[in-house]
Amino acid sequence: MASAPRTATAAGSAAPSSGTGRAVQAAIDASARGPVLLFLVSAIGWLVLASGLSLISSIQLHTPSFLADSPWLTYGRSQAAALNAAIYGWGFNASFVLVFWLMARLSQSALRVPSVLIVAGLFWNVGVTLGVGGILAGDSTSVPWLEIPTYAAPLLFVAYALIGAWAIVTFSGRSSGRIFASQWYLLAALFWFPWLYSVAQMVLFFQPARGTSQSVVAAWYAHGVSSLWFTAIALAAIYYFVPKITGKALRHYDLAALGFWTFLLFSSFTGTAALVGAPVPAWTTAAGVAASLFLIVPVLIIGLNHFPTLAAGADALQGSTSLRFMLVGMIAFTVSTLTWIVTSLQSIAVTTQFTLFGTAQTQAVLYGVFSMVAFGAIYFLAPRLAQREWPSLALINAHFWASTAGLILCIAGLALGGLAQGAALNDPAVSFSTIAATLNPYLFANSLGVILLAIGHLAFAVNVVRLVLQSVLGGAPATDLFREAPALEAAR
Image (cartoon, rainbow, N blue to C red; front, side):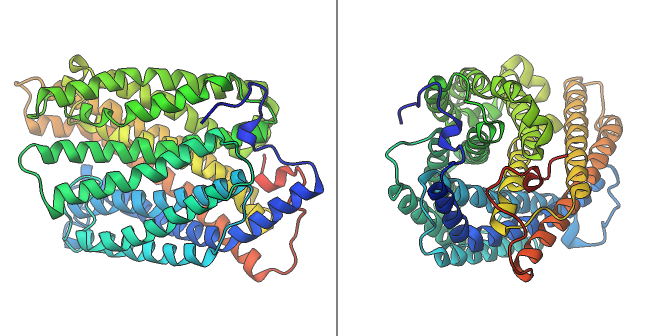
């Protein structure tokens, strides 16, 4: 995976100027249209459901009587269902959208046998439906990030096998021998997830390990999916879209390969840092802490690649909704990774460990990094697939500002609440009832943030559904897909 020259653009993603190049892109988009729109609509549905369940569980934290008479919607079920709907429903469906489109575009290869991906989409979403429904019915496994009952796992395995096989075939059939930075991260994610999921399923459920080994595997899986799947997919999109939309060459691109390998190497060991202070072998947490400290290397390199590029393309940033979402995602990546490094230290973990601060870190990655980048990518690619302009600019602006404000409010409320909670827990003179009362203002702030996020998601959902319906029911395409039109991204 040799790096490209410093003068290379956007991981090879600059739009071709020739008619032949445009025809190739048109053929690729046409082949991807059905599968990508299927996964996109599925992702939107799960996003709305996860938003509703998140709001229910958030309210229950400061108002325990809310829906207390409904066993299907008690906090233990609604919170786990919301998390898994967000991860496997919204997160993975949106990830597959990015994987299909980016891999096909970068390989300059039309999607082969798209019906296979449609079958995979049906299997995946049926599996997630069974899983989330099982959680609400009380069949949760109680393992964080893996609460989906084991009877749904085979459907997810079949779906992912079809998707993984397609990705390998598409990559193998690429028209150029060059491999771009975005493809590095896509391929790493595609190979890492089945390893993470299969090992976790086997060690935790089918042939359960004994004792504290289960805690180590659970932490390894949760952080592995967070970093080696969601963050890697987000970084693949950033490496593609930032130089493509700004029209500027990535700065210090010769360091991108080092950033990739250090990210891949150290992220695979950092999960056990979440168990600092827990009753597990000391060497496992020490390895996690050491690996976490080395994450400073990829953070610096990825920042050097993208922040100067965005600064050089400031005009494009002001006029592109996609870039604005991605800028928020890049800031969230930098801040969340640096925060992880700091909180992995024993002296800091004694305050932040096992508090709301950990929930804030999860929110920062799943929403701040992945979801914001995915929103930006979808605003770019969806109109090119649907061959329509975005129906409403007002809904796009509402989505951006509601999502950004909600994200800040949620993370600030949870993080500050976690610090207050940790300090109180370390004081033996403070009772649990006092701690619970102290947390109420922070939990209210989180609920307000979730409401803002839900508003943004509804605006996004309405716009996407209208776009898809116009594409399916509409007639001839309403726009030249390959002109540089701000309306295609719904600029300001």
